[in-house]
Length: 219
Image (cartoon, rainbow, N blue to C red; front, side):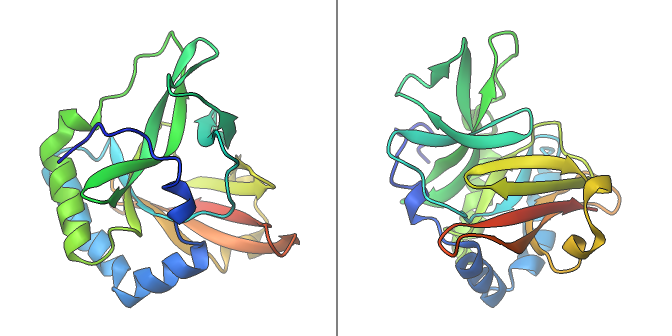
């Protein structure tokens, strides 16, 4: 498996909307697959502190020359050239989906010069190959991806999208009604019960072409 192909800026625009991703995921009995087969692979390879599972979807388009970058729990489009270096630090992939026989990054994280870069996928080749082989075999290669854990995840977080910026908030700031109608979009197999999961709930604010959305991280 090729782990180091060039970044494809068109890959993000091929990602499905949340609605379409959820429909396909459910048609393939995705919840059972994630919570059995993928959970087993993550625990078997001992990477539950490094990787989780993501429902691959997008809420908006990106302008040419920008990528989605997370810094301190805020994710926004950043201008970035092929060096993937900015502000004295490095921009590295944190989310991948499977396309054309290899993992494609679609979200990135900023690592300052004083912080050690996270392990590369190549350092966990046997796990990554087994993970995406299973995803591909189940017919979810464009819909279920791999997520690198940041260390900031908790059992009570809300990710709100304002325009094209995603911001994480503590759960004690979340109105109760936002927790009632969510869609699971991330799973982390490192707690009791043995996974944490992001839930995604869409609000009615924003324009019809780019509504705001909320992601809820709830154990």
